[in-house]
Image 1 (spheres, rainbow, N blue to C red):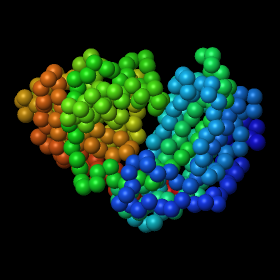
Image 2: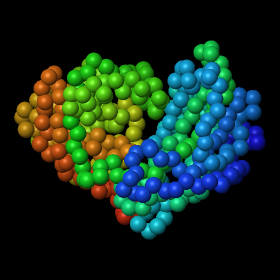
Image 3: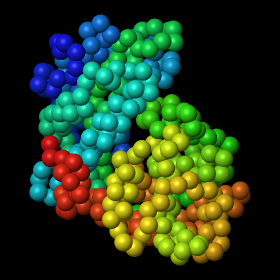
Image 4: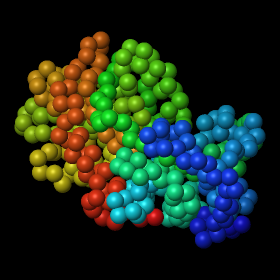
Amino acid sequence: MCARGISSSDISITQTNNPQPKTPNEELKFGNVTSDHMLTIQWRKNTKWETPQIRPTQNLSLSPAASCLHYGLQCFEGMKAYKAVDDTIRLFRPDKNMARLRRSMKALHMPTDDWRDEELLECIKELVRVDKSWIPEGEGYSLYLRPTCIATHPFLGLAPPEDVLLYCITSPVGPYYTSGFQPVRLTADTKQVRAWPGGTGNSKVGGNYGPTMKPAAEAAERGYQQVLWLFDDTITEVGAMNVFFVLLNKETGEKEIITAPLTRGDILPGVTRLSILDLARNWTDYKVVERFLTMTEVRNAASDGRLLEAFGAGTAAVVVPVSCIEYQGQDIDIPNTTGEVTKRVWDQITGIQYGKIRGPDDTWSVVV
């Protein structure tokens, strides 16, 4: 047992005696299959972090009074392991996921001061090594990693957790699009608000996602694949992704890539979002702008012919082009459904993920 912090050097590995058959690439769907092993690390208030364990994937045993089941004391991450063109296994900017997981745990008053990001990341790398045969080959294919932290304290009172389980499961996944880019139709006409200043929108906690299911289902019934979330009239996110718009500036004529800033605390600091901003700031033909864009501005830009393209951005798909936005009962059509910026972002980020091109520095593509 570790005295306090997470120690990757103490990791215990128990291999499965009943390996599962692999799902053929063409049958892979997001989140349907889990691989043979999982990582678990238990924390208790009195003993702190226990020995990290890699063991066969199995169900968890929880008290029905566990506070994660009653008060939403759970958070998670989403990241991927890729089989690169040189046959190495790579993670894309995993230090950003570790830092965000820590921030999410801190938002839920979970233990964050007695472990190092590097130690947890090394434990996750070891899990990937153990299950490396589960990483499907080919561009668009990867092993999805889901680090998760839940409060297992069996207590019905509303209090900081005294027992926490940090675990990671993995799932082989295929391309988000099976036949090229599939532009999506959005609706901004919903009364619901995904996040707000002073809330938890900037953390990856389960409570941000559950309440979005109903408005998303209602949108689908009306022919829209995602909800474009607004706060008053300002655009925040799309579905469970960050969102970008490409506009011609009315005053200067410059082409601008616009996304909401992190200053209000209601925007998730996505790793893909950050990567798009970091890459695009080196482009000379576009200006990167972090500001709150309103739907009124988008509607006016569309009317003036200045709305060039829009896309969502996240780990699952990298980029999702947008073809239409419903706003105040009318559809705003976007002419370039898979525009220049969308394609360039896709090419550069996937190129780095699969080792085809070098990232700005070594933290962008980490060999396991």
